[in-house]
Length: 510
Ligand code: FE
Ligand code: CA
Image (tube, rainbow, N blue to C red; front, side, top):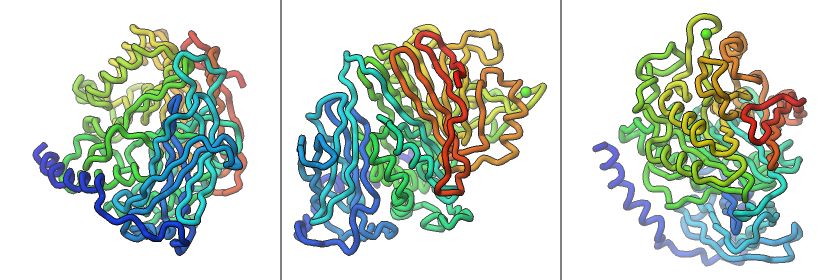
């Protein structure tokens, strides 16, 4: 804690300076001022409300350099929101300042929009126009909405494959993309596809993370998915460092964490209640879509206790059962449960990172669990699941990523007893590109009989999950790419599962 306090005093002054920038505004506005196209990273929107949405872009004429090719002064960026894709019927417009302190990113929290509607948006910097993005506001509270289509995405290690899953996502109807973490990977991996990581040394500093995001954001398929619909983003470990937790508090790691979280903010269409402040950024939040659906977006890294039992895949040790083990921290846990208790939504979706259902990796007698997921935080999981059982918020569905495999799981009051009540469903999307070693797939497939609450498993292919929610049901298509190393790969629906409202547990229908 001493380290953290000292670190905060070092950095809080800097954050304050960034807020009230004394830097001059560019005088070149209105004249061609860019060596290259400045909207090289595309546009995005996110965190939709009934009356507004966050619009994002970043000026980066030379994206793979520390400053993105931008001079060290503030730059005005005009934005407008229209009813039509031709951008003629203007609904809202304004000017935002892109500052070098935030890598010339722009976050416009547009308000005054009408609920449950599609809008189009575009930015202008100097004489350059951005691509046109499409976004949608949420239905108003108390209103019934016919349906909501959202996709689940996670784990997009750039060198491991092409983002074809995003191209397919963007080509079909969708209202929302829910990202469950590992939007970037921080390491030096190069892969064999000619998509090696930048910077090749891996990410430690703010400049490193900025270049890493620029590399991912330069991908045309990812840009298409961002431009097609608003996103709800969360983060997991690789946005900062493999398997980090809130207990990693040495000063060099906190510096790295502050750099990583700032770059995350600079590159994502999020609405923060307060600006990034050193190594801390409040990212858990709840978005509501009329009476139909509520998304509680969790942060299971910043407030998490350390992985128990020495980490890895292990027989369960006493530490994993310690009631003090937490994924969310007590404050976020209280916020989650109180929010679920107060919710009037038909579907209560919990978007978070690691597999929540029990997963025994050891076929036959004995058990082994992965300590980085909820299996290492048993009491915290039990508090949530027994709350769901006792307080009965409507139709709880947990949305997870991280494990590079698609699962459909029954969430059981007691996973050791197949007769114990099913109190909700967990859907896990496979990775967009990140690999899963054969030996882990072999183990999980061999132990299917040890995990009867797992109804579907595929860790051999990459892809995404597409969900359509109505008052009656949540229907999820499990989509997989033929070949993630082929940029033109087709995608196929391998199975479709339905959860009927009022009946916990998913059933296969196709
Ligand atoms: Fe991952
Ligand atoms: Ca076993």
